[in-house]
Image (cartoon, rainbow over all chains, first blue to last red; front, top):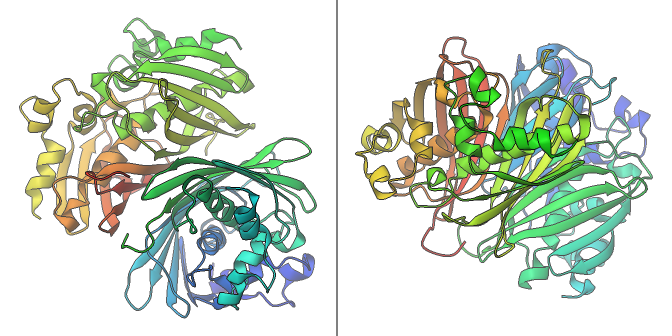
Length: 153
Length: 153
Length: 153
Length: 153
């Protein structure tokens, strides 16, 4: 697995990408992913970075907790194919996030996803959010996915 | 506490609302909340409904797991002031969601938030997502908030 | 499903029970379950009660958080066969618990487990702990189990 | 902070320790901790090891999920004073565990707790369980504690 598949999934968010073509009205995932840059892809590990954008702020001017959870979903899912080479990362079974500190607009943040387990049926990854300047971990989450999409859960 | 404060927080998402005035570029929360209708507000309980909109779909055409998590954040937060009459619902400490089934575009869904505990420092609520037609629970989450925003966590 | 299977699993903890016969040295589950009384079993729901025993206290004289988590495991598992009639409740994939208040030695507590979903592969239940006298919820958790024990996760 | 406080808390489980003196009937924590060996203590990190004992098995002969959760509580709590030098690690607010694989009786396991955040009011740690021989992570959890025990939550 090289950078390409992961980059394609995380960085391509424009209207011309395949994802948004096939579901033309979907704006949620592009909203979350826009600005994400893939810095590292290796077996079981993906590191992305982004500058906290105004569009993901809450009413207090901080990165919205719901946006952080959505990033756990997106980045925690994309790391799974680095192990099993699947073309899908399955469906979400469980997501949890601990919020440790605030992230402010313009902060350079780093999101590191690691697989904890990729089985035939279930995969689990951990996702850590760090402030690039301070090195401070400001959120950590876990993401469990069910991989066998074709069959019934 | 009557419907007003909760309705104002959940249903007012246009550019003329106070929230979006103060942070003019924020589009995340309006994106999540647009279309939410508050059906019940009572002490410790809020029920909302919405029709799953195309803008919250994932690439498979289902309600995005990240959007569900964001709804846990938003609806799980707004139920807290029905107990303590605070004008803020604090900052998120922890969110978790179990995804039990899919929700499709156009499905009428019901989101019920109940407080489990509202203390002076910490509040916890549970949020359940049901399909209105089938009564099926398709997601359940919990949301822990830290209430004393002025002081250090 | 009547009371029998559930009662047998939760209330039989003596050395003469089948479970402890087959693994004679295991003392953990009997330690957790001893004193549990099954009050209700119906499709998708089990209610048990117990008096908080000295053996499950922490150093502060309160019900140990680890014991509460173990009760989520035990009671959250036993409710699954009320739906699928399986003779095993599978293996744990995920457990989470929010601790809302303390429980003191001698407190009469009620533990209610409900299934959120029982599929062919995965089951999820929710477990709520209440003080019988005050009605106060002092803990709530969720338990996800993988049901197909014979195959690889 | 040197090894002493942590060793004392994790390794002293006999009847002559202070903890069990003050709550003479408590058997839960000694049951969990007996056999734990502290291998490393540094600022924000504790590594322990243990051989999976028969007393912590479930009916299938594997390390009980409830015992794993209790170890998250115990080891995830004891790492907090390595940062704030408190003599108490507070009360549990939330525990979650993902179970990734089984641990068998006699397996040498390693439990690593790291602090994610230690504030004035709240602390969060992560706890990872590894099989010493294979290096395999078989469980991972998070533990949130409320530190200000004297005041109301």
